[in-house]
Length: 309
Image 1 (tube, rainbow, N blue to C red):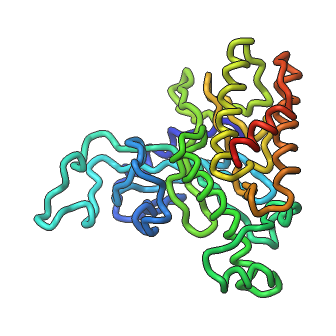
Image 2 (cartoon, helix red, strand yellow):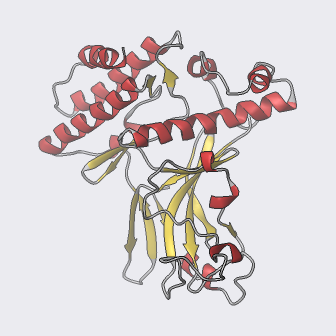
């Protein structure tokens, strides 16, 4: 699904009794997670961080083998204030005073399924060489028959994607800003636009996947430079995407954004790393070659290895 009605949610934060979330809503979870579970500094100005914000689920954007992506609006209703918004003197910090217009942003809520309901068909190829921070969790992951092992294995994909997005965004790679992680849910920047139809209805339209695009020659070259630059950032951080294709790259106007990063592969410790990286190179090069750009997958592979090591 590429478009979701994003105007209907505007009415919910303004309901007569805003003391409790309405249907399909919850209080913002920004401050309910630890600082290490929030996105990297500096936090972009468009991210709504106030406790008075409500999260409203607007609809589903995409279903996948391991996770589903939902469109979420995080918005502060006009005049919305919670006790934690106020300082010790009862006042509001500068810039946090209620206004007549709600502060809002659109987010993607990517929710990973449990092992019983997901299709982790190539898990070992991607996770070989990975280690969790806690030895007990590592042992549990190796014993998927236990309830704890299944729970830890389910969250490792969300953890891997959040950490990858955090590190890549901080390094300047073209990826969505990772807002926060809470269990198996990763909240990240929505890549797309909002448009109004003749009836005044507002829809959020997700940026199309690269596979659907037919760019001009100049834009095709720009896309190639952006993509190889992003792959270079990954390589210098010691990673390969692991499943890079035109289906995992968004074309947001003249810029590309790389998405779907739970299966990032460690180039140093994963024995399949070279094979995975070469596959990524061949897949993206095939798309650019089919559109008339003279590119070489083997040359790209060699360049990325040189940047990695």
